Image (cartoon, rainbow, N blue to C red; front, side, top):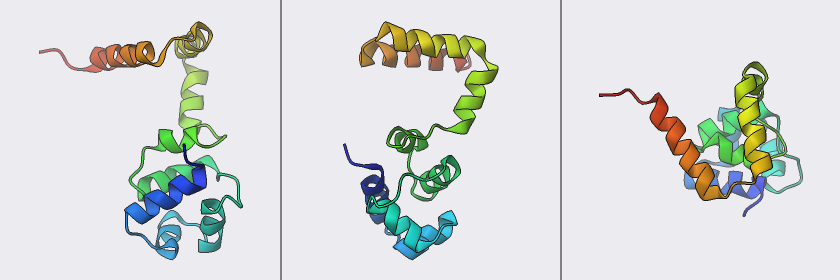
Length: 116
C-alpha cells in the first residue's frame, strides 16, 4: 500500500492538478503540499485531509486509513452514540474476517434504505 503522501500525489496527478493549483484549492501552501507528498511532513490535520479528499475526488476514509488521524465527525458520533461505540468495540474484539464485516455493512445499509 502506498504512503499517505504518495497517495495524495497519485490522486493529484490523476486529477491533472498542478501542485500550486491543488494547494490553492485546499488552502495550504504549495511547499507544504510538496513536503506532504514527499513524506517529509506527517499527514496533516483532519480538516486538511477532508479538504484534500474533496479536491482530489477521493474517499476521505481511505486517506484517514493512511494517516494516524481520525475523522473528528466519526469520533464525535461514537462519543454521542454508546451503541455505536459498543458495536465498534465488539467488531474489534471479535476479530471478524473482512468478509463478515462487509456483510454487516451491507445489512446496515439495507436497514436505512426505504422499503417499497
